[in-house]
Image (cartoon, rainbow, N blue to C red; front, side, top):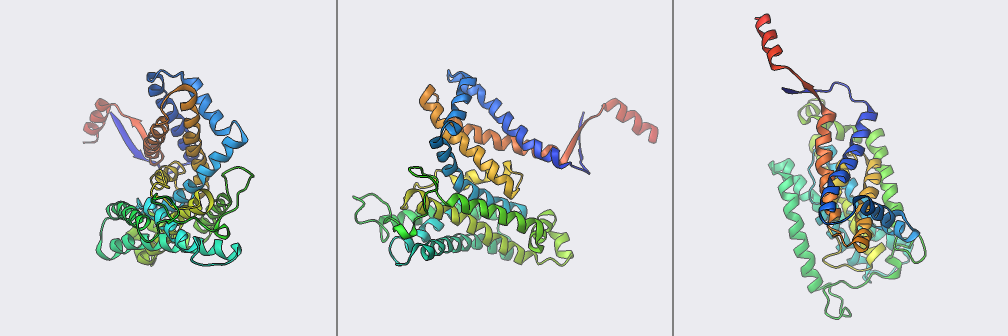
Length: 363
């Protein structure tokens, strides 16, 4: 008989090792469908590694893909730490991008040192405001934020499509539903010549460091952790739980909004309805792989980005579908969820006969 007993003490090394083991396990499990598709497993993973790290261009593509994942992973990790289940980072990304385009496509004329902070602020306000709605519904009416944030994603996407087909449509876009391009002053500079990686990556890394310091060293971070551990105990200790949830919601939405800003201002240059291939949802996997650690989010985002970028290379080289990347990401999430069980509980194998004899002896 198997018995799960709560762990009273978890070493930091053990907690760090489990996500790594989960990632390796996911890669091992993904080897089965790769082999079933007719691909050689070790060669496939070799192509994935080479496609992500094998050249300067490949590595720059990896970093460009990782940038929005760092933002959405941070958005999810901050919210989940307070047990505010934000599943709406995808919608918050889109409204952040929409706000950035509304200002940065020519509505305001200013130099880049004013325009770039302005579009970042606009994206943060848009994303934070969107997340404020389900947060208030949770705190005031007890509505389930999983449902409200998830459904808002579809509402936002439809709204973005309406704007791109209507008032924000580029008249020079040859009929395509896209916004007007960002002005040069509102464009994030590239970090390397002829590469797509841009200074949004630096902003993402600084954001991760700031969130880490705030979570570890500030009173606000303590309030978030206490609220996430036990809401009733936090209230009893005098922590303003409602205002903590609101602050967390605003910051989480703002970080996801920055992901949208980085995509339109740093990578694509204009907004389309398919600018995100699911960065908001993948941010959940990134946050869980990182154990909700802000610095761990950076590592997890690079891992997930490497899988996606490398899978494209592997698909071209071997003819195996690049959708194997989605499978690896899904398996990673499942393995992390299972591994989190072993962080909280230890498994003991108990002989049922001995248990019954002990019970009779006590009687």
